[in-house]
Image 1 (tube, helix red, strand yellow):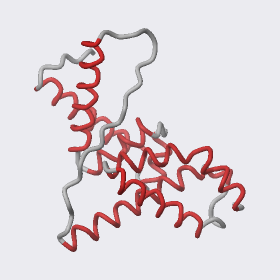
Image 2 (cartoon, rainbow, N blue to C red):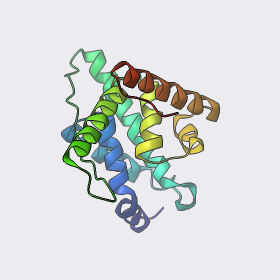
Image 3 (cartoon, rainbow, N blue to C red):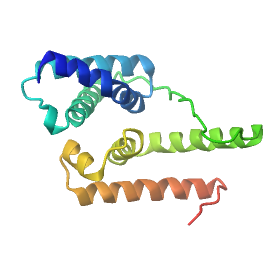
Image 4 (cartoon, rainbow, N blue to C red):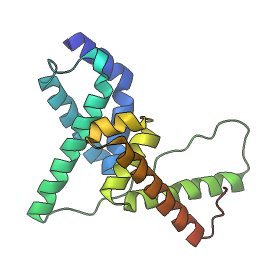
Length: 175
């Protein structure tokens, strides 16, 4: 991949990769740092990246590895600070909802984000990749180096766990 192709890739996919970094870190400053580290590392691997081999997945993979390495180092040093959860804005499409509907919708989204953030890392990352980055099961399996069936199982378990928490707190689940 050339520098020009890389610049086009960042122009096209940079926002989604940054959003994914925000979901992983849950803090804007750390997301900025993770995004920059990811791009720097990707610049060093330009020759390995090919436009035809879905370079977005390559960048997401770098971001995940950087994030895991940083967390591992922080745990080792016993200096991991508590992470603040970042609130992301919600855009509602269509008709204008009532203030009550808007509040309930935001509250439900906030609750789901909190529950997703509390999931074990092996469930949380596939959920983020599937819903926030809109990757397919196959793409997630390739990035995480696990079988497709494992990705499906982890997505199912994560959804089931979140649904159970929602029911505990009185949200009715539609089947």
